[in-house]
Length: 330
Image (cartoon, rainbow, N blue to C red):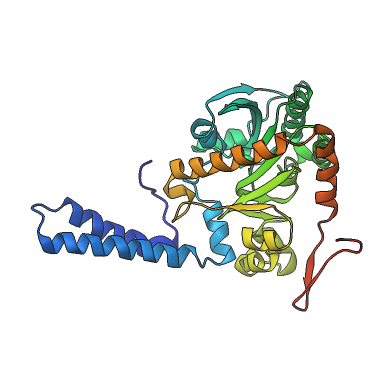
């Protein structure tokens, strides 16, 4: 993919070194001194990437999750799956472009893919409402998941939304009810479900397609009950406290794994998924195939029981630095 044009503040030292490296690599003729400097810069860039991306603050993770060059659902559909046949509409109101659904092929497995889509161009983003789905989007999603379950096809969900669409039109059409209904239906679908947060996992908009046998986040994604800005607006009455809110929300993969909210964190290429779509897609494919193989080996009737127990045990929290678990949790 071409070099990113959107540079985050904490990435700038890396880009400065890469620009110096590019000039040296383009220099002619090459001398032993230039070759030595090229090798030194390559090592320095790798070390700097490890240092920066191995110690990100929660707000920096949020910035990466929102990076405009980060791979979206349509990118994974093109790079991970061999075929994709899109299915449209909810048979009631319309076709919400914020959620894409369709049958796909992943090596020897036939699957149903459901994923948020934010859009790449301004025109596409407006059509997709920046990844904020309406009630018809969740009706479409659950309708296609039920179809998949009917034919014994596993479901793969890609979550990438700041939240469900917050407008009056969505509320008039029962936004909260349809998100709750989608979660209820997913909890009892007798087919394997894998949910992966690929960017933003915000509020009920994410939960609406987030009930699965395996729930994972990418290394630099976030999954939260509310956006940092929304939290800051409620607690501090100003979005300028978003950085503090991001830290308090425990929304990064490491925290979520420790609290038992997710099952896995999928490592991204060094420097973030936006720097190397193909490497990220290869890692995604390996994760999906490994877990599909595991889940498909289980009896279908046991999937819903295990899924119920998995979500029933959630509720771990910290108080005064001590980890607490809900009563009855083993």
